[in-house]
Length: 382
Image (cartoon, rainbow, N blue to C red; front, side, top):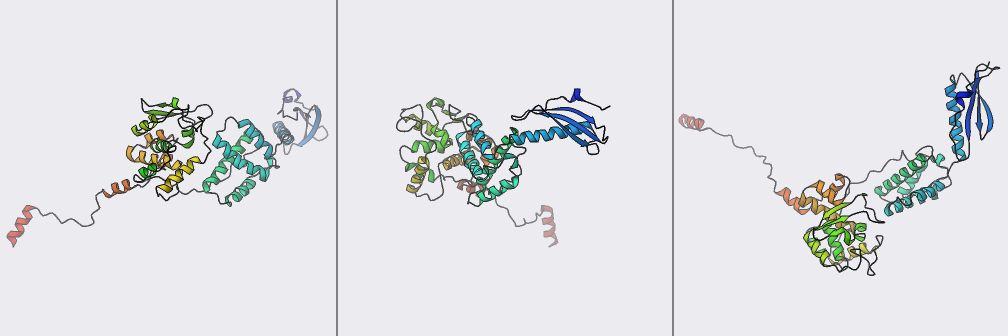
């Protein structure tokens, strides 16, 4: 009599969007004892299939084989293209992505769609992505930009895999490029007053705040008077409304007396400390900051590559130099890792002079010491 497991095998399988299935019975064939006969149902349609016991000696192995094939078939029925997954990615994450992150994702994923939009996510391979990365590298971008593209691809493919839209993370094997050690630009002590002296009136207080508090551009334009306490001499960089800090955390920054004085002289016409002329929040994507810096550099006769973020670099360099506390500098700058803070330590003139004060190493051998007793004996012998 055929052995049946109908009672124990009627377990529901994975229910996809387009396929319903469940297992039925697994029995030994009467006409061919060396084979199993498996019964299962797909969308309520009864199906049967034979399995050689030589390949599948146990019923549990037959079950696993059937479920795996049915799952794969279900996924194939619901397979999504790269283009569809990218579109859904932005739809699902539109509110959680920061502005800068959203721009970076669009930059790289839009290029990915252009190259492989019609390819199904399950068919996207590591070789495809390596070829795309290689082509992107040849456009003249820096290794850091290539690494940004790789991080974006990894996160996107990981997201697709977690949702079941991809059977694997095709980008997992992408290797990051070696990035040369970063040499951040910073103004010297002599250049700082020259730079500030020629800044335009509207830009000068912003430059002073960046130089003495290390605020990023987006932190400057989103700074509100409610986050500034001039009596205590502190300001708070915090998540507020549509603005989220780079680290996602709030931080309190002590203000230098010169900055407190500068802020007290500003006429308040808006909730924002540095608004547009009409009182509205200044755009954080405008090139006004970069143009203002370049204009001041030209007037001050400072010839070097420099941008607004370099003012933050200058603050970080001076903070590390004069405070001598990297952990305190990390907290004020809002870095998640002190290794990031160390990037901003520059070999400034002050450090060079400090090294010059270190006693030198003498290579001359000192004369042997002569004890008083031996000196007297030598004289007597003479």
